[in-house]
Length: 332
Ligand code: AMP
Ligand code: MG
Image (cartoon, rainbow, N blue to C red; front, side, top):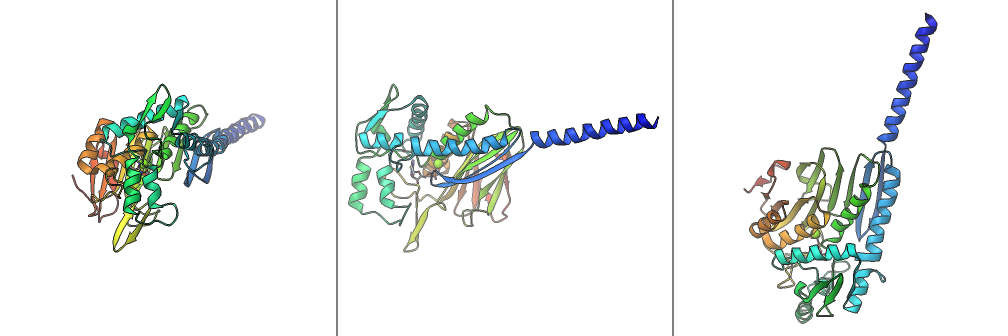
């Protein structure tokens, strides 16, 4: 009898240890943070293949930056297209460009990824300054998405001085690449942030903060409660300088070449697509609340607009938004 009890106890203990061991293996979490695409990238992956995934995520983002989208990396595809005034794109990049052209068109040109030469004049990456008006007018005259077209994967630039810039969409594109990879791996969930764009992946309830435009990077004014998807924010708090009491930031009005000044301080977009969340956050910032809401609705995305007078306007699924800073109130 004693032997039977001992045997049963042994089986239970072995089963428990095995369960705890396998649970630990299946639910292990791996984290990585690194610098890529001129911003901070963080990845937190839970599941059996989490270690493999965090290593691979870094390779995917770095590869996309250095070999494809960066316009400062010598040998990237975009650098080569900019230098040659056009060129053949791979299928994936052509698909991204095609969708970006659609955003340019639907936003009425508020989103324009040919503004590279105009952005450069503001020198946000180094020592920002107000550009010389003649230089700005000249750079603007060579910009404009209508000057480029896709012909069977071949990117044609009518004005060879136009400069493609994926600054407003590259981080979201990185999320789409990472997501496509994660779908092939054995993991439960993941949160991957590339600058202001975040991928929430897996069957889980996620909470994402909307940054306080007046505070530092760790301070939030609202929370989004959501399932998997992509969230991107654009704001005048990201890259800016002040001169004579006026703030000049990095999101430009393609008509004037000057920073957008429409009372918005931040826009957040929720979408299934990383590219759309990123591109639309910039586009909606430029368009303002009314036209930006229509654009977000056209793509079936939720948009959250934050104004300088501390109002929060929502287009789409308002239920996911919880204001956590009492100095902000709903505008609609
Ligand atoms: P984001 O932080 O995603 O809003 O992207 C801002 C970056 O996109 C800037 O640093 C520029 O490189 C680029 N950019 C600025 N204005 C525009 C615009 N109107 N349309 C597309 N890209 C822009
Ligand atoms: Mg963007």
